[in-house]
Length: 130
Image (cartoon, rainbow, N blue to C red; front, side, top):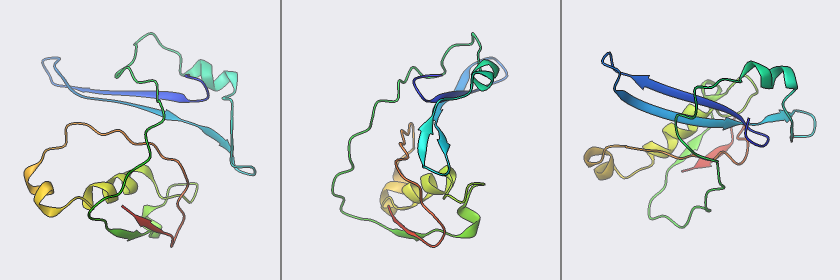
């Protein structure tokens, strides 16, 4: 746990033990009626305790607001984009972010890192501008 966030750590290693991928994520428990975060119950906190350490030492500082951009793309939220809570899921949103990059950049660049902060829910049939 870090503040109100339940922290999940991920690593992928090669057969020889080399670390290939590392990721960390922080998740809020939100009361559906009020849409307000709540503290994790102690029994849930206890399930996640371990001494393996962090995959990435990130304390989830708020990211700056996005500035103006030269290109964009609009995406309509489809039923297949939704998670169990009826929100556009994180994989769909990250896919839209990457697909909105200019084609030349997509062809020439290689993604080495990504930091995402989800600030609002997106629902079925809404439009997302990436």
